[in-house]
Image 1 (cartoon, protein in one colour):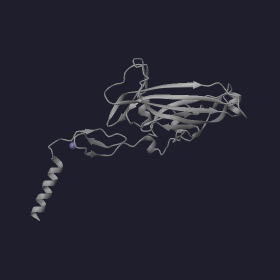
Image 2 (cartoon, helix red, strand yellow):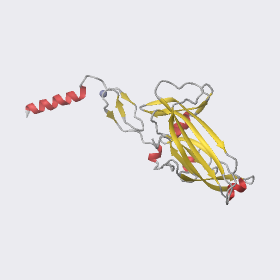
Image 3 (cartoon, helix red, strand yellow):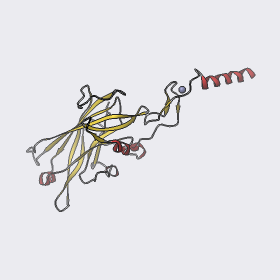
Image 4 (cartoon, protein in one colour):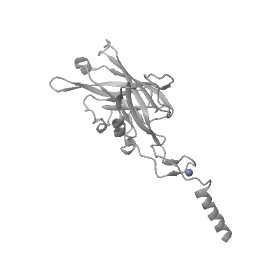
Length: 242
Ligand SMILES: [Zn+2]
């Protein structure tokens, strides 16, 4: 018995001090708890994503599938004329071309991810009144944190923001949005308008914490997360199909 105790004690000591290193923890993030960079030992819990803790799921889960989208237009008298159309994510891909005016930071491996989304409107109200729409970028993990860091950088010629990934902040994330408005096309029973939105994002390689999509023109900015019901608020998780 004494021998066994000694052996256990020895093992315990080995477990603690092994190669004699002092644990060097990188911060917890939304994937992993605080993790020692030397031996991989973890401590505590990973962070809980905002969407997870609020039980919200982005509506658009698949590429090339139509999802309902509701928006509309306020007329001069403040009356909202709602209309309903569809959104389709056409592609979500990593590209090897940097669309930004300046080189990306080399403090980590960033990738360029491009998401293309198509909006089609063809109903009575959109034909009679027209429509307004609002596209957005938000965070699955931390919408407020993303909003707080989001700003236009003159130097980079693009919107820039920070995300927590792999235990640290990545401060050179960037976004460009290109919107293509087609002319109204004659169709039956209603004329049809197609709008194509393209988000080009510089994000840490493999990062999947961003959401892009549209909210109804009836929802005020900053209140979008109070309206997580589709079709008024329709989101897609970037890299969600990767
Ligand atoms: Zn360690």
